[in-house]
Amino acid sequence: MKEDPSLRAWMRAAQQGDTMAYAAALRAALPPLRRAARARWPGTDPATLEDVVQETLLALHGARHLYDPDRPFLPFLFGVMRFRGGDVLRRARRHAARHASIDDVPETSDALATNSNAEETVNADALRAAIARLPEGQRKAVELTKLRESSLQQAAAETGLSVTARKVATHRGIKALRKLLDGSK
Image (cartoon, rainbow, N blue to C red):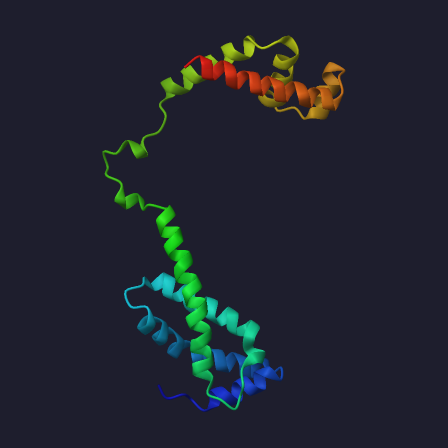
C-alpha cells in the first residue's frame, strides 16, 4: 500500500504540537486504517471493525510520541491496530459468549415469559404472612425501613432506639423473613 508522503510530515508536526497537522494526519489515515481492518479480520461485523478503528486511533493518540518520523507512518499505525484490534475482538467474543440474541430464542420459549399477576399476589400474601410472624422488634424494623422506606435515622427517631439497633433489627428481620419464605415453599 502506497503511503501519502504528507502523513510523515503531518505526524512530525503533530509531535511538535500542531493540532491541525494531527487532524489532517488522522483524516488521511482513516480510510487505509479501515481497509486494513477489513482485510485483517474478514467476516467480522462492521460495528466491531469500527470499534477496532476507534480503539486504534485512541491508542495512537497515547503513543504518537513513539512514532519515528524518519520511517513510514502506516506500518506504525497498522502495528498499533494489530494489538488494539486483538483486544477489541477478544472483548467482542467474550461479550457474545455471555449474551444470547433475543432473535435466537424461539417464540414459544418460556425464557421470554413474565410473572403473572396471580404469582405476584401469592408472593405478596406469603410475604405479608411471613412479616406478621416476625418478632415485634424485627417486624417493626422491616415495616419502617423496607416497606415504608424510612431511613434508619427516621426509624430510630420514631421508635426511640439507636440507629445501630434499628440496623441490626432490620438485618435480623430480613434474615428471618428469608427463612420463613424458604420454608413455605
